[in-house]
Length: 333
Image (cartoon, rainbow, N blue to C red; front, side):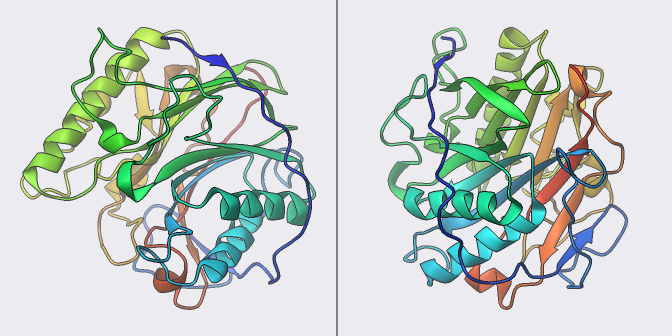
């Protein structure tokens, strides 16, 4: 089942949450990822930015807007997320665990206002998506979302990569969070497919096997549907690349790692240096950016980084994950 046309109105650039974006520490490969703070700012490097590079970011914003499960002050969480995303100034960004879509729309509006750039967004429960279903995210209501600068790319179509797409039945359930796929037409020329994922969490053997199956299903889909396209898959993969968070198991993503001529994790250097993308969990990055061979030449080597916001009580007020960024050059695809 292929994509259907999505029509999205641009968000009104109204309002701006109060507060100044806090200083941010960028943790590149090979440096300490223990949660230190500092004052290195993440200056915009996106379209029209200081370097001309394209910044792709990702962030699990922990039960965003659901105070009975995540950070207890929704307004403070919204302010912190909005100001940090505005400081990142991404050209393209994936989010996970969006529970309150009204609060999330405010984040995108603030991003547009503070950066003076136009942004659009879509959340995975949007009924205009192909294969949309109302109960995305199950009882927790955790939704993925994608945000992009409209002067960087134009939306062509969007869908949920539904589990009936491969031979009528996928082996995995994707934890009721089917991958969110958009087809974007880049302003610089060419077409980019971007897929936001949020795979099964937890360290128990059953959850590990679910991630193995999710990875197998995802690769089967990419091999079949996008063999000749430029594709990036970004999000919370919930496991590491050089060994699993499940004790004694290899990475559940070895099917991609072993297919190095076709797929590459831009975040592999973070795994090799045992960085962490979690506030209270050391040595394992579980949030990743993966690209296929069509984008190997666009990736800026060594650009993958974990962003550690200098927000007071960050883990209790904002998220249990750190944002990740990777930079590219996109003249043409």
